[in-house]
Amino acid sequence: QKEVEQNSGPLSVPEGAIASLNCTYSDRGSQSFFWYRQYSGKSPELIMSIYSNGDKEDGRFTAQLNKASQYVSLLIRDSQPSDSATYLCAVNPSYGGSQGNLIFGKGTKLSVKP
Amino acid sequence: DGGITQSPKYLFRKEGQNVTLSCEQNLNHDAMYWYRQDPGQGLRLIYYSQIVNDFQKGDIAEGYSVSREKKESFPLTVTSAQKNPTAFYLCASMMGWNEKLFFGSGTQLSVL
Image (tube, rainbow over all chains, first blue to last red; front, side, top):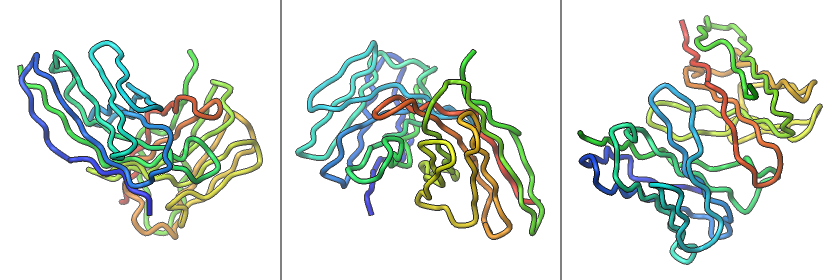
């Protein structure tokens, strides 16, 4: 069974700090990695995708991928109260006939305190 | 505006009843998906369809059925065989390989 593991949190950071969210995955052949943000009662929204080792930056968000360690992380700089949400890590496994057959972690709940 | 429309937003099911959740997209996407989310849990794949008139079981298909008669529509039926149907159901679509997965706004299904 392919798995994606995340610390459920809650992770609490003060406004303006860096929030660091981590995810590990079991399928060594995985090629695509995604971070979704989900507000309570709402649907997930894609905020970052990463496909190769290293860092990818988009505004206040940085995704980091280390395939050798099977580890992907999301850094949120200058955290704002509006960043308070559950962050889902999703991995596209090396099996399966459709790219949308993502395996999702259970999510990390982030709380940014003013 | 293009997007995915799920209806209803809230749905209640009686014992032994089948209920159908609607999902319509006007994004011209080929692939469509149904996920189930339980509180504090990640998303689990129920069914997916890559082309019209074809669909595949996901990880938790038992007690569910789907159809894909039109590219725009992918309804999900929760049958009476699904003994624990209470969950948040999400429909999603994708244009092609390795593209962004778009989600609808979800349907919260509860048992009366």
